[in-house]
Length: 223
Image (cartoon, rainbow, N blue to C red; front, side, top):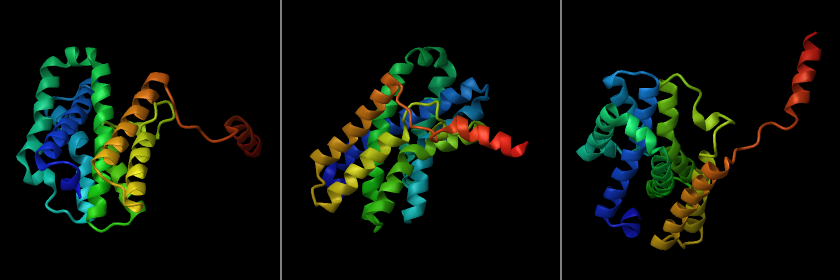
């Protein structure tokens, strides 16, 4: 199905672009955490490949593409070297990095969902693995850097929600037999635009309803 949506060369090029940008975000966090060069490389690799590795292992696509295509493994290392030497300049173009990161999010949530469905998963499970493909590397990055994953923090702009929207659009298209290059591209664009809007307007997911009164009740119960 993926080969029907994109030619293998286009799919490969898009994957490498997404991997590169995700690796940049991992390497930048490593620099902020004062990691050494090995730590920068590890965080770049994990951020770029973690989601895809998780998906491939779960659906039985082994060995994963990250271990059969040298380009997938080398691209994060190139990003790590770039950040190692030029991180002040990379930090200055953070807005551009965020734009490409949003594009990678949109691409990976769609291709991850389609690949999971190709391997026999149901629609709901395919969408869940599409989400995992898009955000899994970032979760692993934050865990290794000893931070609460951005995915779970209320004070971060929407990240998982755009991926959920993109993955949901894909499974709906599969369900109604309308998945093609156009509709899959629209799913990528929807996730991409939603992520950019969240960054621009600082959209965040709601927290638990009536939190302050709940804390007050807990405090009175404790006394």
